[in-house]
Length: 304
Image 1 (cartoon, rainbow, N blue to C red):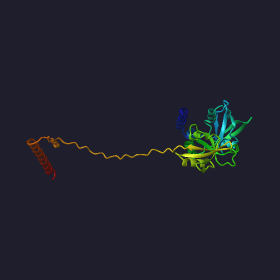
Image 2: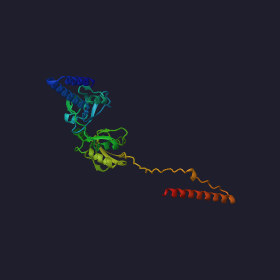
Image 3: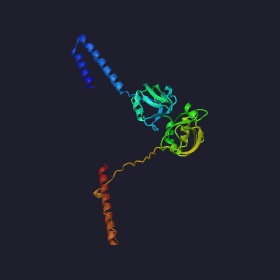
Image 4: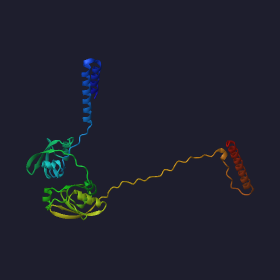
């Protein structure tokens, strides 16, 4: 920015110093220079939308330095490129992958529309796929599944249907179970397909989200299929977090504090008996009469 300011000052000085036919070219150069600087500032100010690959990975395997694709988002960039759950990630755009942190580092700063070469091992064959990063889908009710049940779910794929011996692709495929969540305590494993929840049929993650939300804060029966085996279990669905009620405290209007004037002060009557009490009362009456007379005189004087 400092160099740009110096260059602009030189151009303006040249335009002012020149006259006649030489002034207009300098002015044109000044205008073009300013436009270029504005375009540069705009391009820097615009944030880059990070790209979305559309898969989940896991490096908690018996073999060290191995990252396996756990799940593929149907219709996402990874799915469209041909990547599959179970593939072992070898590299992303030339960066070797040995942990989930390597995956994050390889994708860091890559914008929507970036073309990346992803190397995987499928079975015993190494393959390479070209993936164009897309936009991250907007948040949906699937967030309820994660918050209340503790799982991340997606649509049933052909592979998961065959693995679980399902007749069709109805259900919600569990891509990840969060440790310590209600789903983990109920014994729901990764790769299972939830087909019913609390008496409701589950055909997709949206059905599961609706059923989970309806059961928030209560126990519910979940039916899932894992490895062609159907299992029923009870799960304690977490409660919805309600915002704390706002308690409005009425504000009392401020009241003026009236301090007594010295002339308004009346000596308290002592708690005595007999003549002393009578004399005190008489003295008080006389004081009140004198004060009343003063008030009447003030009123008469100011009433004209």
